[in-house]
Length: 48
Image 1 (tube, rainbow, N blue to C red):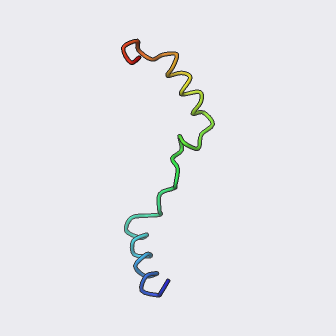
Image 2: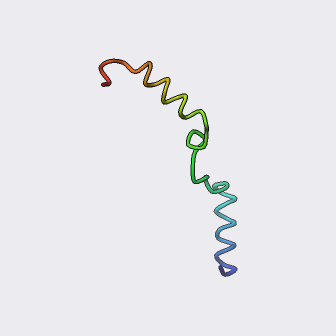
Protein backbone atom coordinates (compact mmCIF):
# COMPACT_ATOMS: atom_id res chain seq x y z
CA UNK A 1 0.00 0.00 0.00
CA UNK A 2 1.50 3.30 -1.02
CA UNK A 3 1.54 6.50 1.01
CA UNK A 4 -1.33 8.06 -0.93
CA UNK A 5 -3.56 5.05 -0.25
CA UNK A 6 -2.70 5.14 3.46
CA UNK A 7 -3.62 8.82 3.68
CA UNK A 8 -6.90 8.14 1.86
CA UNK A 9 -7.71 5.27 4.22
CA UNK A 10 -6.92 7.42 7.23
CA UNK A 11 -9.23 10.18 5.97
CA UNK A 12 -11.99 7.64 5.45
CA UNK A 13 -11.51 6.24 8.98
CA UNK A 14 -11.67 9.73 10.45
CA UNK A 15 -14.82 10.54 8.49
CA UNK A 16 -16.70 7.26 8.86
CA UNK A 17 -15.12 5.53 11.83
CA UNK A 18 -13.72 2.05 11.98
CA UNK A 19 -14.63 -0.68 9.54
CA UNK A 20 -17.69 -2.67 10.51
CA UNK A 21 -17.07 -6.14 11.90
CA UNK A 22 -17.57 -9.17 9.65
CA UNK A 23 -20.39 -10.44 11.87
CA UNK A 24 -22.99 -8.72 14.02
CA UNK A 25 -23.46 -9.24 17.75
CA UNK A 26 -26.43 -11.52 17.25
CA UNK A 27 -24.43 -13.72 14.89
CA UNK A 28 -21.65 -14.07 17.47
CA UNK A 29 -23.95 -14.51 20.43
CA UNK A 30 -24.54 -17.89 22.05
CA UNK A 31 -28.05 -16.67 22.80
CA UNK A 32 -29.09 -17.07 19.15
CA UNK A 33 -30.32 -20.62 19.75
CA UNK A 34 -32.39 -19.37 22.69
CA UNK A 35 -33.98 -16.69 20.51
CA UNK A 36 -34.74 -19.21 17.77
CA UNK A 37 -36.32 -21.53 20.29
CA UNK A 38 -38.38 -18.68 21.77
CA UNK A 39 -39.56 -17.73 18.29
CA UNK A 40 -40.57 -21.30 17.45
CA UNK A 41 -42.56 -21.54 20.70
CA UNK A 42 -44.24 -18.15 20.24
CA UNK A 43 -44.69 -17.99 16.48
CA UNK A 44 -48.23 -17.05 15.44
CA UNK A 45 -50.10 -19.91 13.72
CA UNK A 46 -50.52 -17.98 10.48
CA UNK A 47 -46.72 -17.78 10.10
CA UNK A 48 -46.61 -21.55 9.47
